[in-house]
Length: 160
Image (cartoon, rainbow, N blue to C red; front, side):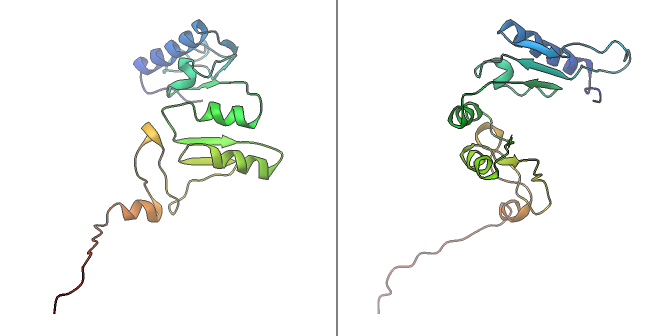
C-alpha cells in the first residue's frame, strides 16, 4: 500500500478511523501509522467491523486504505445496504452462484459492478456513477455521445 498524497489527507483518513470507532466500529486490522515507515504519509490498511450502515465510514468516501465491513441478512438486506448511499460509482458482488451474483448486481444503484472478479474498465466501456457520483459517462459510445449535438425537427401537416 503506497502513501497518501499529503499529511492533511493522512490526518483526514485517521480521523475517519477515529470517527468509525466512536460510532461503534471495531478495528480488526490496522488503524494507525505504520511504525516501520517514518517517511511518507502512510496509513496502515485498516479493516473496520461492526459498522452500522448509516455510520460515517459507511456513508462517506474516505479516499484511504480503510474497509468498512457491514454484516447483512440475505440478498435483499445486502442490496438495501449497498443502495443506502448518496453515492453510486462502483460496487462488487462475490458469490459461488453466478446467477445470484448477477441478480444482486442488477439491483445495485451503481454505475459499474464487478461480479466475481470481473473488471469493467476498458476504453470502449462507459464509466460513471449514479446520484452524487456523477452525471453522464466517460469513454465508450455513451461518453462519445455527450459531445454530439442532436437535433429533433417535428413537422406538422403541410398546407397546400
